[in-house]
Amino acid sequence: MMQLTQSTWLWGLLALALPIAIHLLSRKEGRVVPVGSLRHLRETTSQQFRGIKLNEILLLAVRSLLIILFVLLLAGLFWKNADRQLWVVVDRDLLQNKRAMALADSLTDKGYEWRWLESDFPKKDRVEESASKNNWQLIDQLHTQHLQHAVVLSTGLLTEFIGESQPLGPHIDWHVFEPAEQKTTIYAVEKSGNKFQRTLYSFATRTHFVTDTVSVFPDSLQPVNPIRVSLVADKNFEQDARIVTAALKSIATQLPVSIEQQSALQPNTDWLIWLSVEEKPQTPAKVISIDLTQSNQLLQQRTLNQWQLTQRLTVDAALQNDFTIQLAKLITTQVVADEKISTLDNRTLPETFFKKTEVKTAEIVNAEFNVPLLILFLLTLAAERLLAFVRKQ
Image (cartoon, rainbow, N blue to C red; front, side):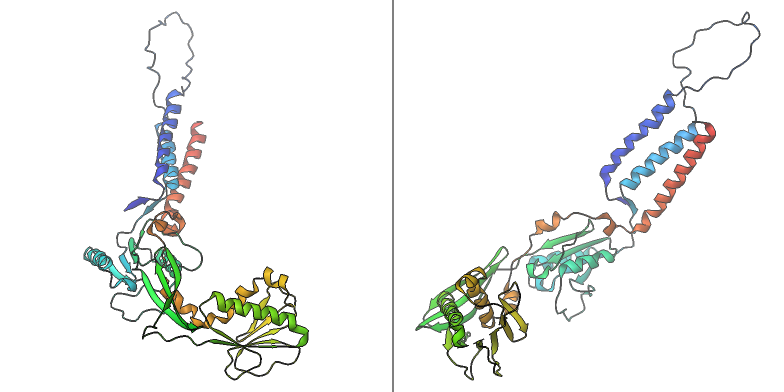
């Protein structure tokens, strides 16, 4: 079955009027016949257009064919293989979505094959689920399958689209079924005699956090232990130590976390901030030490559990580099792991995003389908030039 990827180019077929007009208006010179005397010739009347005929019918046909082939090349003519498969590609997260399952079942009744939205698109009978997925990569893989049509049913979660976007093409329809709003209390802390719990709200267009004061913690939620920070500083680093202390107090005031600051290294220390030229002690705690190096980052990670301050702490340096914010992100990371928050993020890409994706013809049409048409066009062009040369047209 023939299909076109750029059907608007069919307007170019109007150019067929050009060779016809040229052939109609071109008058071929008559044959010269020597006559000895004009005495026996009589002048007769003739109709005005009796001499206008379609000369060189073969050349006219070849030139018309040449225009038709050129327009079809521009219009992206290709032959669609009727034996190609029909797929309905389903996200496993939609198994509890009644609308999505109803659509998938109706498509399978129409001859679509059920595949999972995972790497290599396993069939429906495969039970095990892939560990992770990147929908942009899966779209790219869909193009390599040379399917007749694919309908993708997805949650559209933003966290599952990583890297550069990929165009769908006309043979892929992407439907988004937005998940329900997610409400999860992720942690609780107690400080200054008050109880706080942090709740995450996430839906299709937004994810945000709310901190509430409660009288009793939920039974399923254990309070987070205080963050224990040991600050050890030489006399030469007293100003640096004061800025670190001020930053820790600001973090404890602004965030619902409890920070216990210690002046010496303790066995239960979570973080050791070492502002000294002396050698750091061996400790299982995570360490922030001072190491003056040339770097654009004030806080720089060296190993898995060690960070360094690349310059002396002054008020200006702390403000310009957002030291308090960097320190807060660093020491409060373990309160709730980023991986846990990402699994609760229900923001989605809207379905309209996929409908506006531009189509790259080269990615949806196998190049071999256009090769015969191109060869035919070149052969017709050569034949037209040769015929025009012989007929002197």
